[in-house]
Structure formats: C-alpha cells, structure tokens
Image 1 (cartoon, one colour):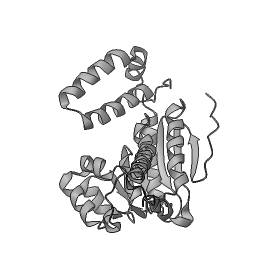
Image 2 (tube, helix red, strand yellow):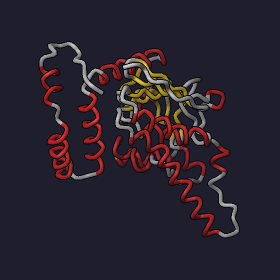
Image 3 (cartoon, one colour):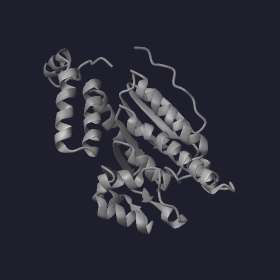
Image 4 (cartoon, helix red, strand yellow):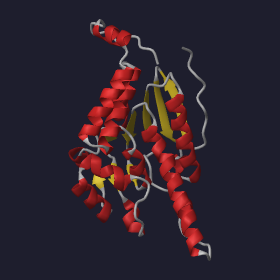
Length: 272
C-alpha cells in the first residue's frame, strides 16, 4: 500500500513511517502553548489518523524544551464573559468549553493506540491532552502540574474526569487541589506514566519501539482491545463482558487467527 500524503498543519507536524504516525506539537517558541489553532488541528489530525487505513499506532511528542505549557493565555481570556447579558454569555462559555473538550477527545476517540512521549513541562492543558492518550512515557526531566487551581479555574477539559482512573482518586485529588509539581519519578510511581527514560533520545527510542511492537499486531485486534479497555473504564464488569462477547462474535477473523498462530515468532502480514 503506498504511503498517503499527510495533511499539513500550523501547530503540528505529522509524519508516517511503517504504519506508525508521529504527531509533534510544533510551537516551541511558546513552549507548545495550546493556542486556538492547535485545538482545532488536534481534532482534524486525529480524525484523519483514525480514518487512514495505513496508520496502526500514533506517537504524540513535542518539539523544543517542553512538551506543553498549557492553554494559551489569549484563549484563556475568551473564557471571561464580556456580554452584558450574563445568561447568554454563560451559554456561549459553556459551548466553548464543550468544543474544546470535543477537540481533545478526538485523541481518545481515535481507534489507533496513542503513545505520548513527554519531556520537560507538561502543565494544565498538557495534562488534559496526555490523559487522552492510551500510554504515557516520560524523560527524567519531565514534570506535571494541574495549574488551573492556581488561576482560580476548575479544570474543565478532561483531567478531573480521566486522571482518577489512571492514578486513583486520592492522588488525583491532591494534584488537582494543590497545583503542585509532580516529577517523572513520582508520575511513574503513581501510574501516570508507564516508564521513565534518562534522556529525550532514549525516550523517543523506547516509545517508537513500543509503537512498532503494536503495529506488528492485527490492526483489527488492536482496535478491538482499545475499544474494550475504554468501554470497561466507563461501564460495569458485566457490561464489559457482554460487549466483548458481542464484539468478538462479529469481529474475530479466522484467517488472521490462523496467520498469527503459524507465524512462529515472525510478524505476520495483516490487512489494515
């Protein structure tokens, strides 16, 4: 299958190599602050990745010294109502927040696994962003902070809803209510990141190695596994068991099962 032409963006770089897509936050002069264009572009980018058959795994990383410094202050200013009609202004603010939630939710909705590679600062909206990923890896210099509380804001784009599922409610409560920094070592102990690497170079090598391992699996089985894991997070065990039984009754692929069983240690050739 020939490699497709990747779309271009102002705030992101997108590359595709051997079924692994690399999405790079690309506003390093501002520490990858989440400007208005970035939110819309993240949604368009991950919707394209979801639909593109040649993409099996996504690596999400960032250019420059820091992963993400959070929501851009100019965008933050839009959250302050200016209309004399308080009720209509409040409605517009709610619609803006819902739109931003939907923008970032495209990362979680993407059927392909998303591996985040985090270095330097990951603050505010950056934490919202990585909580949408399926796996998170960090370099030793990475640190995390839910800074909205220090700006007199209730974090509203997903951290408070997703983070407790990753690290437990008590730890999430502490980080969200104090706004304190959490370094990479603590993030690993809490379960926020899967692994800590000493350098940025080692981080990218590790993440791309994990991505390559996943890309070698049956894409249909990988997509089903991600679907079940996300469904199980938000539903009961009984609901999850019922769903996976229904899913496999329709989605199990006899030819791919036979191909995987006879591979003898080699990576089988799977269809998209």
